[in-house]
Image: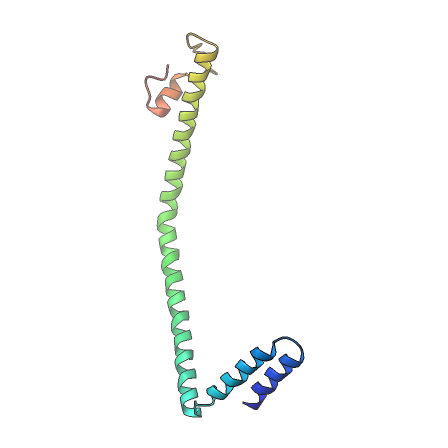
Length: 129
């Protein structure tokens, strides 16, 4: 216990803590003396066991998360791809509608036209034109 008191006094001397903080720490150290060796060892054992159990649970959770990730990853990729394809079709429909309203009264129906049949089929929207 004397080593702890000396460390507190050294911190005070070095200006790392205030006199008030040093007083509180020294009083706390006095109160810490209530634990006998057997009690302290019992507490240390319980803390060690708790730490080991936390480690075991963390490893178990990590393993379960890896399994879950492997199951979910393909589904997330597939859903993401479908969402991207749908977004592209919607953007094509918007571009077509803008082009029609700004420049044309009828669709040009050439190979570069955004109103082409592929856009209709992609989006399942037969009323694109």
